[in-house]
Length: 132
Image (cartoon, rainbow, N blue to C red; front, side):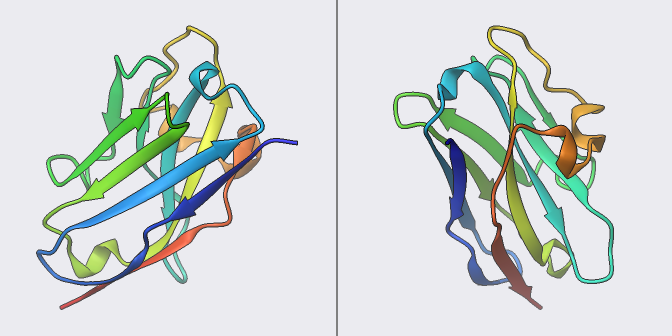
């Protein structure tokens, strides 16, 4: 049974940097489009960023474009989310999502608007808190 697990959350001051990691196990990582979602208390789920199986395509939510960076290392079965120039509005639980898409670039704005049940794997989340 495959799974994905997030690490790296924590407390950071506004303007600070944080790196989140999501490591997969029990699945062929290179066959998956990977992405990050977040949900703040009382708010709806928001797609943050996604990356295609080959790293050839990335997509970002408008709220984080230019401040966050997504990357992946298929040799380590890991996808990363670098939070730079963080803002208090970035405070949320961050989730990793995986969609089976072998050699197909599915990463897009519509991908970021999907819901949890649309994905093959979904992590337990890691909390990010940005203080003012």
